[in-house]
Image (cartoon, rainbow, N blue to C red; front, side):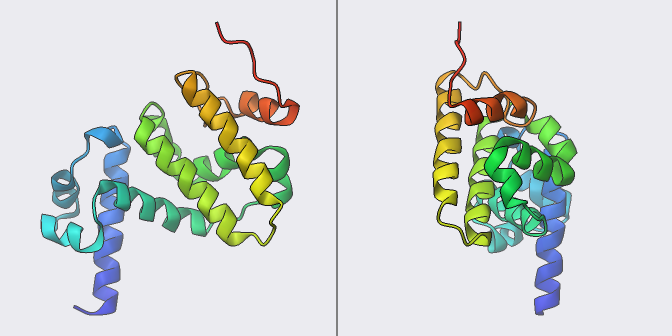
Length: 167
């Protein structure tokens, strides 16, 4: 199979997976469904992706690579930056997946990894550490704040370094 044919097949699988993500929660999607949607054999999907987590990770990386992230804006409002990049690319998927914990963890991780890879600023690690601390705090409180819809609250926590009272 030629390189272009392989790239086309991988793109079709990614697009089919994206369509499924607009209709079903990530946790409910199977590799068999992805293959059926892409009109390829299940083994073909496994040729390119280890599992659906790998598929999501590679897909998000592929989508985010073309997005420019304003580093100054990120340092001031990291959650709004994530929201803006994600919604510009993944609006329908984010809406469907907003309550899927596994999906959100992969999105967060990929965004942070890409940010680190694309920026040449060691000070960025301090900002990311603070952001991860807020995400962990939020997770400990059963994800009270949705990362994509409550970004203003999360950015306020980031800026003030004060967690709100949770009842």
